[in-house]
Figure 1 (cartoon, protein in one colour):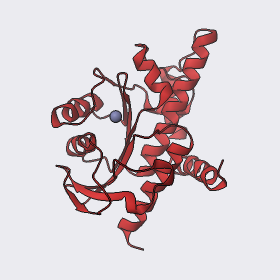
Figure 2 (cartoon, helix red, strand yellow):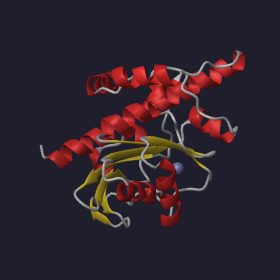
Figure 3 (cartoon, protein in one colour):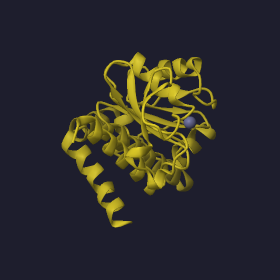
Length: 228
Ligand SMILES: [Zn+2]
Protein backbone atom coordinates (compact mmCIF):
# COMPACT_ATOMS: atom_id res chain seq x y z
CA UNK A 1 0.00 0.00 0.00
CA UNK A 2 1.31 3.47 -0.87
CA UNK A 3 1.80 6.05 1.87
CA UNK A 4 -0.98 8.16 0.39
CA UNK A 5 -3.36 5.21 0.48
CA UNK A 6 -2.46 4.53 4.10
CA UNK A 7 -3.04 8.20 4.97
CA UNK A 8 -6.44 8.13 3.24
CA UNK A 9 -7.43 5.12 5.33
CA UNK A 10 -6.26 6.83 8.50
CA UNK A 11 -8.25 9.96 7.64
CA UNK A 12 -11.37 7.88 6.95
CA UNK A 13 -10.92 6.14 10.29
CA UNK A 14 -10.49 9.46 12.10
CA UNK A 15 -13.70 10.92 10.70
CA UNK A 16 -15.72 7.76 11.26
CA UNK A 17 -14.54 7.57 14.88
CA UNK A 18 -15.46 11.21 15.50
CA UNK A 19 -18.88 10.65 13.99
CA UNK A 20 -19.33 7.44 15.94
CA UNK A 21 -18.61 9.16 19.25
CA UNK A 22 -20.95 12.06 18.49
CA UNK A 23 -18.23 14.70 18.21
CA UNK A 24 -18.71 15.19 14.48
CA UNK A 25 -22.12 15.64 12.87
CA UNK A 26 -23.14 15.85 9.20
CA UNK A 27 -20.56 18.60 8.71
CA UNK A 28 -16.95 18.43 9.73
CA UNK A 29 -13.76 17.61 7.94
CA UNK A 30 -10.23 16.41 8.39
CA UNK A 31 -7.14 16.80 6.27
CA UNK A 32 -3.58 15.54 5.96
CA UNK A 33 -0.93 17.70 4.34
CA UNK A 34 0.69 16.37 1.19
CA UNK A 35 3.84 17.67 -0.48
CA UNK A 36 4.05 21.48 -0.79
CA UNK A 37 0.60 22.94 -1.44
CA UNK A 38 -1.64 19.89 -1.41
CA UNK A 39 -3.82 18.13 1.12
CA UNK A 40 -6.02 15.07 1.43
CA UNK A 41 -9.49 16.05 2.64
CA UNK A 42 -12.92 14.42 2.76
CA UNK A 43 -15.41 15.71 0.21
CA UNK A 44 -18.10 18.00 1.62
CA UNK A 45 -21.09 15.96 0.53
CA UNK A 46 -20.47 12.57 2.13
CA UNK A 47 -21.87 10.33 4.84
CA UNK A 48 -19.38 10.64 7.67
CA UNK A 49 -20.62 7.41 9.27
CA UNK A 50 -20.03 5.40 6.09
CA UNK A 51 -17.01 7.24 4.77
CA UNK A 52 -14.62 5.35 2.48
CA UNK A 53 -11.35 6.24 0.77
CA UNK A 54 -13.42 7.07 -2.32
CA UNK A 55 -14.69 10.09 -0.38
CA UNK A 56 -11.18 11.47 0.10
CA UNK A 57 -9.88 13.86 -2.52
CA UNK A 58 -6.61 15.71 -3.00
CA UNK A 59 -6.84 19.47 -3.41
CA UNK A 60 -4.46 22.39 -3.74
CA UNK A 61 -4.65 25.41 -1.43
CA UNK A 62 -7.13 27.11 -3.79
CA UNK A 63 -9.55 24.19 -3.49
CA UNK A 64 -8.92 22.72 -6.94
CA UNK A 65 -9.33 18.94 -6.93
CA UNK A 66 -6.15 17.37 -8.26
CA UNK A 67 -7.08 13.78 -7.46
CA UNK A 68 -10.39 12.04 -6.76
CA UNK A 69 -13.62 12.26 -8.71
CA UNK A 70 -16.33 11.70 -6.12
CA UNK A 71 -17.06 15.32 -5.25
CA UNK A 72 -15.85 18.71 -4.15
CA UNK A 73 -14.04 19.65 -0.93
CA UNK A 74 -16.06 21.29 1.85
CA UNK A 75 -16.63 25.06 1.56
CA UNK A 76 -14.45 25.48 4.63
CA UNK A 77 -11.37 23.98 2.93
CA UNK A 78 -9.95 27.52 3.40
CA UNK A 79 -9.58 26.73 7.10
CA UNK A 80 -7.10 23.96 6.29
CA UNK A 81 -5.24 25.92 3.61
CA UNK A 82 -4.89 28.96 5.87
CA UNK A 83 -3.43 26.97 8.76
CA UNK A 84 -1.07 24.93 6.56
CA UNK A 85 0.26 28.15 5.03
CA UNK A 86 0.82 29.76 8.42
CA UNK A 87 2.11 26.67 10.24
CA UNK A 88 4.80 24.59 8.53
CA UNK A 89 4.86 22.31 11.60
CA UNK A 90 1.22 21.25 11.11
CA UNK A 91 0.66 18.07 9.09
CA UNK A 92 -2.98 17.33 9.91
CA UNK A 93 -6.11 19.26 10.89
CA UNK A 94 -9.62 18.40 12.08
CA UNK A 95 -12.54 20.81 12.25
CA UNK A 96 -16.12 20.20 13.35
CA UNK A 97 -18.91 21.66 15.44
CA UNK A 98 -18.95 19.64 18.67
CA UNK A 99 -21.68 20.38 21.21
CA UNK A 100 -19.96 20.95 24.52
CA UNK A 101 -17.00 23.10 23.54
CA UNK A 102 -19.27 25.13 21.26
CA UNK A 103 -21.76 25.66 24.09
CA UNK A 104 -18.96 27.28 26.10
CA UNK A 105 -18.21 29.85 23.41
CA UNK A 106 -21.91 30.40 22.68
CA UNK A 107 -22.42 31.22 26.37
CA UNK A 108 -19.26 33.35 26.48
CA UNK A 109 -17.54 31.06 28.99
CA UNK A 110 -13.79 30.56 28.93
CA UNK A 111 -12.47 27.03 28.51
CA UNK A 112 -10.84 25.90 31.76
CA UNK A 113 -8.44 22.98 32.22
CA UNK A 114 -10.65 20.80 34.44
CA UNK A 115 -9.11 17.39 33.81
CA UNK A 116 -5.64 16.16 32.96
CA UNK A 117 -5.95 15.49 29.22
CA UNK A 118 -8.00 18.63 28.67
CA UNK A 119 -5.15 20.74 29.97
CA UNK A 120 -2.99 19.79 26.97
CA UNK A 121 -4.79 22.32 24.75
CA UNK A 122 -4.89 25.05 27.40
CA UNK A 123 -4.72 28.02 26.87
CA UNK A 124 -7.24 27.61 24.10
CA UNK A 125 -7.66 30.71 21.90
CA UNK A 126 -11.10 31.69 20.60
CA UNK A 127 -11.87 33.21 17.22
CA UNK A 128 -14.20 36.13 17.88
CA UNK A 129 -16.61 35.37 15.03
CA UNK A 130 -19.16 32.65 14.32
CA UNK A 131 -18.75 33.02 10.56
CA UNK A 132 -17.88 30.06 8.38
CA UNK A 133 -14.22 29.82 7.37
CA UNK A 134 -15.20 29.78 3.71
CA UNK A 135 -12.87 32.47 2.41
CA UNK A 136 -9.24 33.50 2.70
CA UNK A 137 -9.85 36.42 5.04
CA UNK A 138 -11.60 34.28 7.63
CA UNK A 139 -8.93 31.61 7.25
CA UNK A 140 -6.25 34.20 7.92
CA UNK A 141 -8.10 35.46 10.99
CA UNK A 142 -8.40 31.92 12.30
CA UNK A 143 -4.72 31.16 11.68
CA UNK A 144 -3.78 34.36 13.52
CA UNK A 145 -6.04 33.40 16.43
CA UNK A 146 -4.53 29.92 16.56
CA UNK A 147 -0.99 31.34 16.58
CA UNK A 148 1.39 28.61 17.64
CA UNK A 149 -1.20 26.70 19.68
CA UNK A 150 -2.38 23.16 18.76
CA UNK A 151 -6.10 23.99 18.94
CA UNK A 152 -8.64 26.81 18.92
CA UNK A 153 -12.35 27.38 19.37
CA UNK A 154 -14.50 29.49 17.08
CA UNK A 155 -17.24 31.47 18.86
CA UNK A 156 -20.68 29.80 18.55
CA UNK A 157 -19.31 27.69 15.69
CA UNK A 158 -16.85 24.93 16.47
CA UNK A 159 -13.36 23.71 17.19
CA UNK A 160 -10.17 23.07 15.27
CA UNK A 161 -7.26 20.87 16.28
CA UNK A 162 -3.93 20.34 14.57
CA UNK A 163 -0.95 18.05 14.89
CA UNK A 164 2.10 16.45 13.42
CA UNK A 165 -0.21 13.59 12.45
CA UNK A 166 -3.92 12.91 12.15
CA UNK A 167 -3.64 10.89 15.36
CA UNK A 168 -2.60 14.07 17.23
CA UNK A 169 -5.44 16.14 15.77
CA UNK A 170 -7.98 13.39 16.53
CA UNK A 171 -6.81 12.80 20.09
CA UNK A 172 -6.65 16.50 20.98
CA UNK A 173 -10.19 17.03 19.71
CA UNK A 174 -11.42 14.22 21.96
CA UNK A 175 -9.57 15.62 24.98
CA UNK A 176 -10.84 19.13 24.28
CA UNK A 177 -14.45 18.07 23.91
CA UNK A 178 -14.35 15.76 26.94
CA UNK A 179 -12.90 18.60 29.01
CA UNK A 180 -15.63 20.97 27.86
CA UNK A 181 -18.29 18.41 28.83
CA UNK A 182 -16.76 17.91 32.27
CA UNK A 183 -16.47 21.66 32.78
CA UNK A 184 -20.08 22.20 31.75
CA UNK A 185 -21.32 19.47 34.10
CA UNK A 186 -19.18 20.65 37.02
CA UNK A 187 -20.52 24.16 36.60
CA UNK A 188 -24.08 22.87 36.94
CA UNK A 189 -23.40 21.75 40.49
CA UNK A 190 -20.63 24.03 41.69
CA UNK A 191 -17.55 25.99 40.80
CA UNK A 192 -15.32 23.86 38.60
CA UNK A 193 -11.74 23.31 39.66
CA UNK A 194 -9.10 24.50 37.18
CA UNK A 195 -5.63 22.96 37.13
CA UNK A 196 -2.75 25.18 38.27
CA UNK A 197 0.20 25.99 36.00
CA UNK A 198 2.30 23.51 37.94
CA UNK A 199 -0.30 20.74 37.58
CA UNK A 200 -0.64 21.46 33.87
CA UNK A 201 3.13 21.30 33.37
CA UNK A 202 3.12 17.87 34.99
CA UNK A 203 0.24 16.75 32.73
CA UNK A 204 2.08 17.90 29.62
CA UNK A 205 5.20 16.08 30.69
CA UNK A 206 3.36 12.81 31.33
CA UNK A 207 0.49 12.88 28.83
CA UNK A 208 1.87 14.51 25.68
CA UNK A 209 3.24 11.21 24.58
CA UNK A 210 2.89 9.36 21.25
CA UNK A 211 2.27 6.04 23.04
CA UNK A 212 -0.62 7.48 25.06
CA UNK A 213 -2.03 9.26 22.01
CA UNK A 214 -1.99 5.98 20.14
CA UNK A 215 -3.73 4.27 23.05
CA UNK A 216 -6.51 6.86 22.88
CA UNK A 217 -6.82 6.37 19.11
CA UNK A 218 -6.89 2.57 19.57
CA UNK A 219 -9.62 2.86 22.20
CA UNK A 220 -11.97 4.65 19.80
CA UNK A 221 -10.88 2.48 16.92
CA UNK A 222 -11.86 -0.68 18.80
CA UNK A 223 -15.23 0.89 19.67
CA UNK A 224 -15.85 1.65 16.02
CA UNK A 225 -15.05 -1.95 15.06
CA UNK A 226 -17.33 -3.24 17.81
CA UNK A 227 -20.16 -1.01 16.59
CA UNK A 228 -20.29 0.52 20.05
ZN1 LIG B 1 -17.31 24.97 10.54
